[in-house]
Image (cartoon, rainbow, N blue to C red):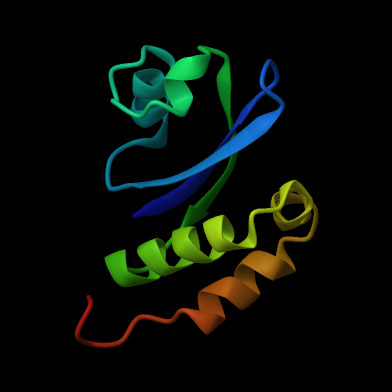
Length: 100
């Protein structure tokens, strides 16, 4: 259960997504345009910028939603620069016994 952030040098943009599979497989799908998202099909130079390993699906989706809601390149760059921000996110969106 991984929330991941991709970066495109060509577009100068980030893409946030989630996966239950291997991140490198998902990255390959984005770059081959087989994943089916219009946003990532604009270019084929996506690189893994950051991955956040989550404890459950609920946490994974909540963290993805939080990052997307921020709509900020600076916020995403700070997540990588300051790993303690990721820990705060994980603590904010904890798993309960229902979602394991």
